[in-house]
Structure formats: structure tokens, C-alpha cells
Length: 300
Image (cartoon, rainbow, N blue to C red; front, side, top):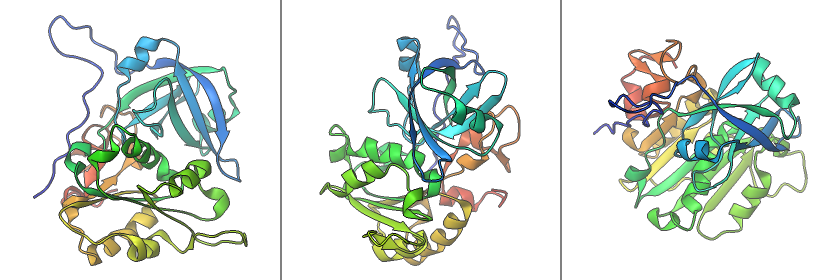
């Protein structure tokens, strides 16, 4: 059976008598903190606070969704939400410096004002995964929505909703891992299993795994079953070689959850640049099961 993931409700309402929110209008936010995550300094986490507390209430999101970060005169970029909806008073995004908007954002300072539009897209299927084992598989800077997911599941109000939690996360080198303090804190817990790996470790103090994510997945991921779901988010090459591993281990395709957030564009399906076949990734995704992706054109 193919599990259909419904898009999250949009901010605008079509009901008679309701105020229609302009879907292109961002909420004003202030940069409250900036953390340089990686040794190459190309990945920074930005902590934003809403100028109007009511806007924070309107920005009701779930782990797995994304938003558009906008800078006046520069444009906007779609970025996965790195904070968890259980974290109140702020919202976080980890941004890779790769283009005009992201490069400008990296030059901004604490206290600067910019725009935040969303939340957009659908989320990971949390209600479906309640009472199940969850395996998180991530690589590189695509770990952002997975960080959101881990914090969400480990929240005291939610931890009992899920069975075993396994996390497999890899980067090129120790200095390219995101959220290193949190990774260490999660590893010290007894209600989550962390399997951190790097492609190569030149640091003699490195005490974790060495190897590509697909290899560590085959070694560390739990056995497949009706009560086990896998969430995968990472670079295309990682996903390409991880999928056969999960197939070999017997994971059902409707139990493998994947994100096409790299296909995100305008966020509301208006620009027509995100579609894969008849599906608009901005509206129908970015989260799909592998079963859904299997019947879609291989355009992603």
C-alpha cells in the first residue's frame, strides 16, 4: 500500500469572511544568533526571532517542512527548517554559502532584519510513525530537517510516542559535521542510538565510524519490519547508494521516507520549476515515500 502524504495547510484561507494572507508576503524576523558550523565556514546556523509574537503563532510548522528566507533587493531561497516545533521563541535555519542570497546572508550580523515566508511543503509523516521504530539517515548539510526531527522526537512530550530511534549521519570529515555539541549530547543519552561517520578521519582523536553512509547503514541500521520506518535526507549520491542497501535489508518502499527539498523553488507551486511529472514538489512534497517516487518520472 502506498502511503499518501498530504501537503501542510497553507497560510491563506479561501473561506468566505476570512482575511486572505498574501502567500508571497514574508514575516519580518531579526537575526538573534549566528553559529559557524563547519571548519570551512560555509555553513552557518541562523537563529531568528519574529518581530511580532503573533507571527510566531501563525508560523506553525512540523519537522520536515521548509521556508523561504528573503533579503530585500537580493531575493529569497528555500531552506529546510532546522529547529523543532517544540523549541519556542525562535526558528533556526542552517544555510550553505552557495549563491547570491546565501552569500549575502552570511555577511549579515546579529540584529539585522530580513524576511521569512512559510511554513511550506509537507512534513515527515509523524502520526503514521507513532508507535514505530525510526531510523534517521543523513549526510552533509542536508541534516537540517533531520535535526528538527530528532529534537522533536526526543522532546519529553513526544519520546514515548516512538520506539527505538537510530541515527546514521555522515560528513566528509569531522570538521564538516553539523551540530557537533548536540551530536555529543545525543550520544550520551540512552534512548537514542547515534552512528556518526566520516568519509576520512585525519584526526587521531576521532573515535567514531569511518566509512560512507551506505556502508554504515548496512552495518548499523536495524532490521526491516512493519514497525520500522527510515527517513533519508542527503546529497543525491548518498541517496543513490543508500536506497539499494535498504532494499537489500528488506525495507518496504512505503516505509522509506525521502525529501526532495533540493527541488524547491517558489514554495507554492506557481513558478512551475519544481515539478516532477505531474507532482509539484513545493505543494505535494518535498516529502515522498520511495513507493511514490518509484512511479514518478526520474526527473529528480
